[in-house]
Length: 124
Image 1 (tube, helix red, strand yellow):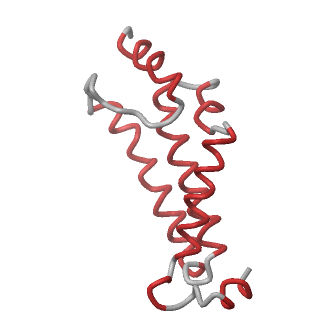
Image 2 (cartoon, rainbow, N blue to C red):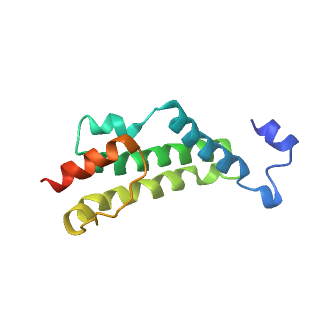
Image 3 (cartoon, rainbow, N blue to C red):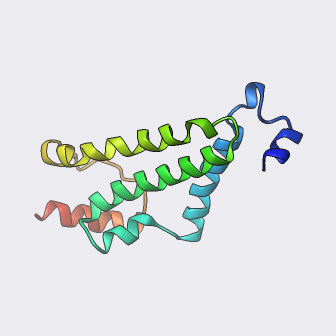
């Protein structure tokens, strides 16, 4: 991979981080179009809207980790990127306890499940 990147000159100048962006977004697009969803897997074992949040975060952490390991300009930051993505997960229980989401809140993810999640959350 490094040889391919070097042959195109992608490791220097304005293109620094190009491979990271390409791989990161590519992984998310592949997941979206393939139907593979961490959210759906988590929803089978937990509260729907929490699973959506955690699933989205985990998907981004994994995409960030893979992308940073493949991009030679970001490789040294891979551990920090991963840990920086994990730390905000610790705030979810606090946010769930003290922050009320509005009915107009837009969730991104498994669109066919959003209405069911919102309906079940309001009825509790």
